[in-house]
Amino acid sequence: MTPRSWLFVPGNSPHMMEKARNAGADALILDLEDAVAGSEKPAARSAVADFLATRPEVTCHVRVNALDTGLTADDVAAVRGAADGFVLPKCEGPDDLKALASLTGGAPMLAIATETVRAVRALMTEDWTHPALAGLAWGAEDLAADLGASVNRDDAGTYLSPFRMARDAMLFAARAAGVAAVDAVHTDFRDTNALAAEARAAEAIGFTAKMAIHPRQVGAINDAFTPSPEHIAWAERVVAAMAGSEGGVASVDGRMLDRPHLRQAEAILARASVRPG
Image 1 (cartoon, rainbow, N blue to C red):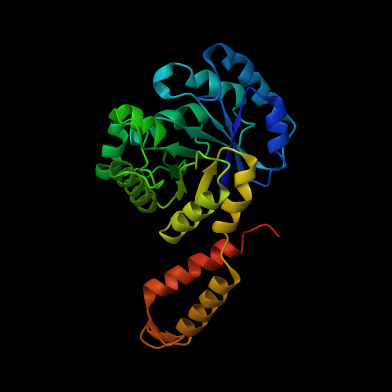
Image 2: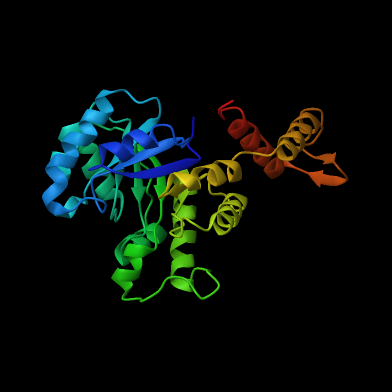
């Protein structure tokens, strides 16, 4: 199943990892990076390995420390073979994907690809295709620090222009590479209405999932990235009409449709067919 929701969980908290097991997220990101202080990282590796040894019935990726920290190899070694995949922070391009793949043996990876200015430039100039790459994600917090920006959203909660550009670049790069496009966390976990609106807007322009920082965010994210009955019914009508059409053009609900609409419909039905329940 392609995840709709990716829930971050501190790798140094066995209690929170156990609680996250049943939070309803499609995938967990067991975090060895930002959520864990330097002195606690060895213990966090052990805690994550112990949790994975219980074989949780949810997809679990481990966010390792960035490649330039000197900690990545130890992170991977602690969980290799037990984790379903890895999340690479501060990823700055295809060379970083290759570097992590060499450590993991080609395990699936989600790369967070907008945390530095160099990464954003690479999104716009390089092909990120890699056999181990399962998805690209973006985040605005580290990018703000690298830019020297004091804020990343305006007073209305809308991302400011440099961050919208980074988000768009990541979406294009993910689509070009044929992988999942994962939207950033909504940091105010108490404002579920704003989260839901942001998630729906992301889904509408092609994102396939969103990251979460609190279990209470998972339901709204799953709802936003699950095709509605109305969308499924429309997609079924499009597929049926195009199958019976001549010349690759059909009419559905009074609209003329062609090959791009068929691709949209097929994508909706593919997503609907793999959802729980």
